[in-house]
Image (cartoon, rainbow, N blue to C red; front, side, top):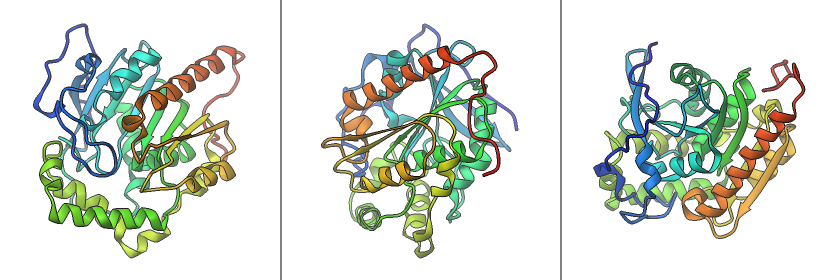
Length: 319
């Protein structure tokens, strides 16, 4: 493993590129028009890291890891670095933290991931890829911010990895188990991919949209995927959690938050975002980002109040 091209933001703005304009309407977020990014998105610094000879697309906003804690963004099942849009810049501005994002293998401009994917692809990402990404990026203090599949990956990582760098967890529309509504929506989007221009729109953001779409969609619709259940990881999370869910989410219901409340032992805040669907950070941006900023500020206060030598981080003892 080696790191390549990891850079941190400077005062020089980035020129807007062709992928900063429009977003595909996947049903997992709003269809946004070009030109609605804030000027803060120009602080993005693109880079890459290399793991086992394969390249991962990365980006940084705000201070580097030597200067402040880092919000590590883990994207949804059809996401990538570019599809976070202006959210990273807004989070950096609101929290004072650095923000780091990467596109998983098979997504965005990262190297492809051969099909078919293992049905444990989220658990595998949490166990095998994410820790090496954090190492290669030089992360010192991390708050994981995961959306959808990314939230599931974050939960598994926080529950299983004894990583003393971890300070908190933000889960946006995360999946802890499979719901019938979830599968119905994923089946519907497969039809849209085959019959509409969704493939072309995803192609603006992904080097190989078929890999990105089929890897995710085929896995979720596989009959054996109905047994997906990461609730055993939840009691072992030892850092504060903020979990957000849209009230109109077609991919999951408030039952996901209920399960988290029953199983989590760490300090937990849950927020239902009225009117939001599967991407409240885009569909209800002010409310969602304000909740995240408040949570990060509370984490800072917790750290300030912690006595010298007091243990922190995940529950590393075997449960």
